[in-house]
Image (cartoon, rainbow over all chains, first blue to last red; front, side, top):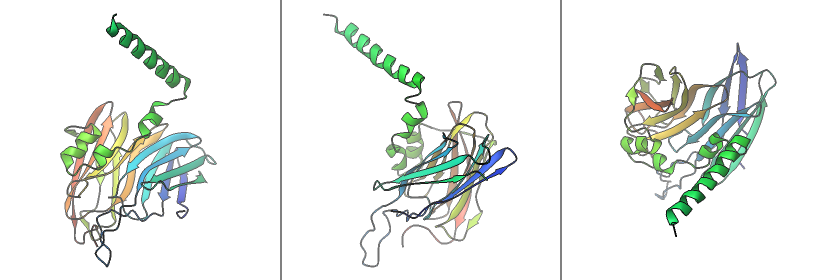
Length: 103
Length: 156
């Protein structure tokens, strides 16, 4: 199981800034290890962000996203205390869901 | 036997059921779209193929689509990119790096109050144009910027 995500959701005015850090190797499948063997691709394929029970961001990503991906989004209309749920699924079927509250 | 009529009737019933489900909220359109990773777009090896996979064809340049990226990235493994679309009714944003082996990096769809804005950190193999593509009201728009990479982020 992958490491927990770090999620920060901060209300500024009427816009909530959401930042997520996911712990994932994001292996491209193009890198070779010391022995010269190709390291198989292992990367997050899809991710979603729900705020207050509503889907706000639906993302698909590929190997070109950096290791331990960081994403930032902004959402209007959320309130302090609203639940922010972030999920991802990678190409091996591993998944992880974490949540935080809007502060 | 009039087979055409049969097929039409069958089709009508099926789409009727689907429309009913959408109306009932059991199958929201966003969820239907989220089901599949867009393999055609993500595995395209050049810009044209990736744009085609996104259904974008040749998007129009737009000043209202703002792509923020460094002029020079010291480390190609972590290039911060920030895209903001001020185009009304923007529903999705995709980020592409022209000279990466697989140009399409990420694509995000927004709903329920999310602003058309996304930031991410990308890997870049070499100096290249970074392109943002936004979909607004069924049309595609683009903005681009060259990022110089001194140390590549691909390979070992």
